[in-house]
Length: 255
Image 1 (cartoon, rainbow, N blue to C red):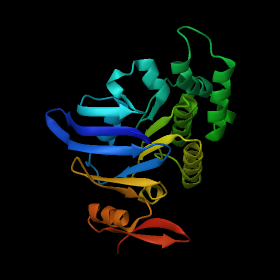
Image 2: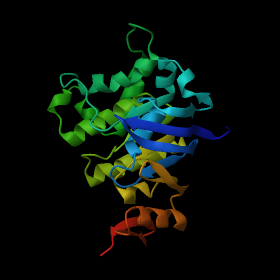
Image 3: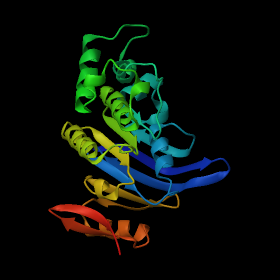
Image 4: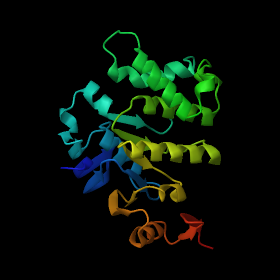
């Protein structure tokens, strides 16, 4: 399908013996940022893992016009980058080496990193403001600093589709704003970004919002549209309200 980066059809997935995704379709536009929101237990992270091909499921996922199941590992890893919750890496690796892991899909077996690999890693570390720590061990960093390095690893892949599950975890507000700038720059370059976010106000900066509850997609629409705002408010039981503040949509607790 033209202009569709990721298409999921008749998706069902289970954790243990419990079905958590209950059969739905979802088409995500190419070169746009889509955020997925919903209450705890809605199935957001499970859906993102299905789109990444990380967990078993029924139904089909198409990535950039090709069935995800038909792509071999290296090809998939070149086209799709992943940043998950609580991602880990060896604490004794340097920041530079962690980010370089993102270049593995582009490197021939047992080859040394190329000049292009080094340039991609430097670009990613500078984008996340982690370049100055490049020689430090990952284990020496705070939680927020680690998150920025892991984001750099995902950016270094230079994939056409980037999936991120709770990428703002441990980031302070200024670095959340930096993350927003990174995402916008990626979209301007034609990259498709899909993020699961608890921060509803940040999610409303996206081009589109997917609203989930109980393993189903309840709404998928433009982030600025009143129907989307109503769906977001409803899925959280009316406990928040979306307002325009200084030209931006903000989700505030309803008192």
